[in-house]
Length: 347
Ligand SMILES: C[S@@+](CC[C@H](N)C(=O)[O-])C[C@H]1O[C@@H](n2cnc3c(N)ncnc32)[C@H](O)[C@@H]1O
Image (tube, rainbow, N blue to C red):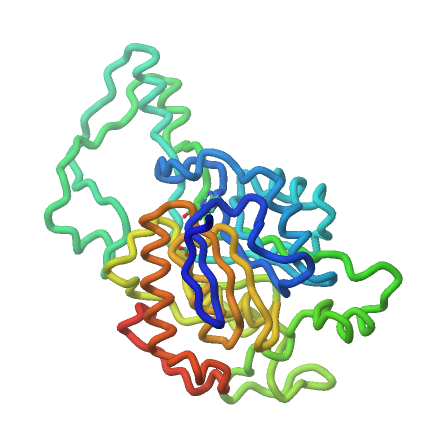
């Protein structure tokens, strides 16, 4: 028997998502998920492989015709994931880029490795404080960094390759936008009338005009621009900002949440709003610490989530329970504007 938590508006399962056997055919309006990327990120045991493509067939079964999905992926393996999803009869509609500025390139000093390979001793030219990760006010604010030798290549070939590396700075994560085909021979309108699915909720995700911005285009929509396929969590300061979704940066995750790939709630809000309407149901088969569920409940959507790891499941349970308490479930379906951002919940 499944181990699950339930309320009227959500059900979360502490078991594998494969089969989605608790869910009925054609019953869900959207899948929004951040599955294992298959790149062994930070050596996480659950990230060794991409999900078995069976899960996309399961998603196809439980989604209503015309439903949309958003699937996070990695730069290195999104192509494989897209093939798995497409082979399961979904349509690939777009790839959104979630853009940020704090990614670090994975690299090494190749010039020094060449010296080593040639058995030539590299020159010590000084020392430096080893800095890892981001700190407010930048690297200079690190007082206790470990001191390391600063080396330069000595060999001729090492000098030729001085300054080379093995990768460029990652500044985006892809989010694949997919759709289950609408019912055979049905128009989009007929599909929406029958299932409530088949279109994106552009209206809820418009980007408001900037203060004092002159009127744009021939027929400016009063609520702003249509959201683009670039989503950002950092300021670009280059004049392009107004075209991209501008969410607030999540500064503090809850102290009890140690999930290594926690997704910002603002990005999840955008996806939930884009793919669904109020009272519809969102599925996340790989929910981790429950970010999709939290957004869904805040935005008056229902939620089904699966998480195999017991510890992550308990974190998701705690975060979702906090939200449900905060919203006091009987009034959950009142307008979302009643919900105020709350530090206690970590965003
Ligand atoms: C990338 S993480 C999701 C993180 C999430 N977006 C968050 O904000 O916390 C993917 C999750 O899928 C879970 N997982 C892996 N295989 C699973 C399976 N077969 N069924 C359910 N969950 C699984 C992992 O334990 C991991 O927590």
